[in-house]
Amino acid sequence: MTTPIAPTAAPAAAPTATAPADTTIREAAEGFEGIFMSILVEEMMKSTEVAEANPLYSGLMTEKLGDQLAGSGGIGLADLLERQLGGGAPRVGAS
Image (cartoon, rainbow, N blue to C red; front, side):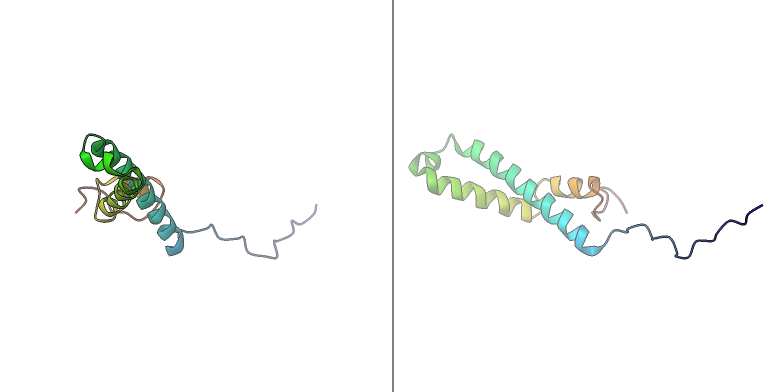
């Protein structure tokens, strides 16, 4: 009978979540929430005089307002996306 050959190198460790990956996930989630909030604000602004004044300015305003809303907590969409994508967002209602 033959003796099995022992492996010479240790098996590679499984990849672990690192801070840069979590940061990238968070940035992507906040970016998505910013776009979503901008779309919501744009729809709300369509019925106001601001939207009729100058389309360029109203477009910039809705984009920046959406980004600000998302950056200040938004509606929780970024936290949900981060948790679903494997980031480090705390669970809603967790102690």
